[in-house]
Image (cartoon, rainbow, N blue to C red; front, side):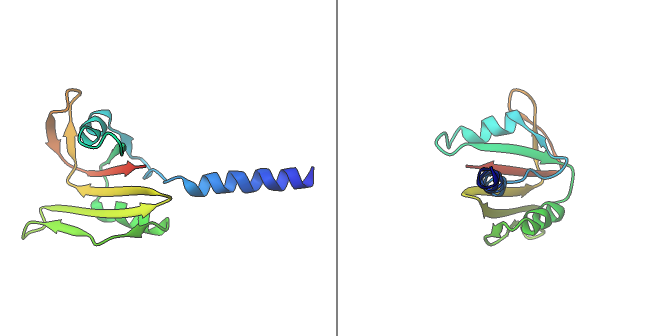
Length: 119
């Protein structure tokens, strides 16, 4: 019984460590996920949106041990920001500002931060 319990605890710990955490308070965006997956059907992404800042989201994933590639700022005044991370055989892409889409996939606003997690 003791060995079975230890194996179960080890298996649960391994599964817990293998998953990429979702940023607290971020909401799943089905329309953005569909748009992100269209050009890459073999590498699906789940897209989440948060009203929190880009810097808060980047700090969260760094604190969880994600390995960051070089952050990218686009435009002279950094009107767009992106960062890529890898964690548990997944890719995490963080972008600001987020494209908020309606159900048809049309961009209706640009605010908050996007988190795209691909497996």
